[in-house]
Length: 114
Length: 113
Image (cartoon, rainbow over all chains, first blue to last red; front, top):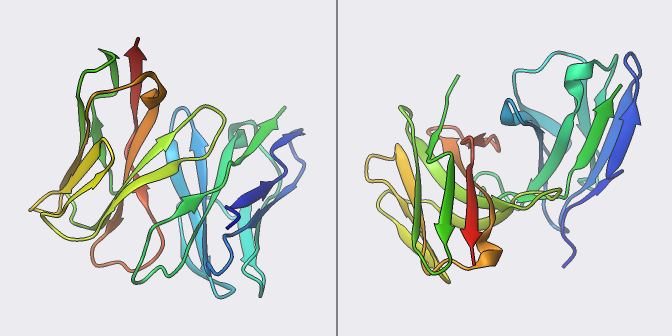
C-alpha cells in the first residue's frame, strides 16, 4: 500500500508570492491534516479535512487555506508569502479520525521563502 | 494554548543502553502517539495508545498511557545506532474527536557505537 505522498518536495519562493502544496493520502483514508514544522515552533497544526469539509483549524492567519477533493486528495495554499513561512509542511492521513486517530505522515514539502 | 512538555530535550548514549523519555501536560488526552523523525523526512508512527494505563510494545520500544491521562512515556531497550533521530510524542485532547494532534518539542537521540 502506497504511503502519503506530497508534491513538490522542495520549493523556493519570494516574499509576496503564493504557493500551493499537494497531498495524496493513503488509499482509503478520508481524513487529511496539515502541519507546519519549524525549528523554533516545532510541529504546529494547520487544519484538518474530512469528506471535503474543514473540521478543525489551527491558529494561523487567513493567508493559509486548504481544501479537499472528493478523492480525499488535499491541497494547501499560502498567499502573500512572508519570510517566516519558511518551513517543512507536513501532511498526514488517517483512516477514521473518530475511532482511530493514527496519523501517517508524508515526507513533507520544504518551503523556502526568500 | 495546550502544550506537551517533552523531556529530555536531547540524549547522547552508548550503544546497548536503555533510553527513556516522557511527555506531560496539564490537559487530559484521548490518545497518545509516539513518532520518530529522521532528517529530511516526515515523522514515522511508532506506537499508538488509546486507553489510560495501556502498555504497548513494538519490538524494543515500549510506551505507556499514563493513568491520569496527562502523561506518557517511551522506553527503548538495548539501543542501536539506527535509533538515532528525533522522537516526538503527540496527543489528541479529550473530549475532542477531531484530527488535531498536539506535539511535544521532541527528544533528539544520539547513539555512540
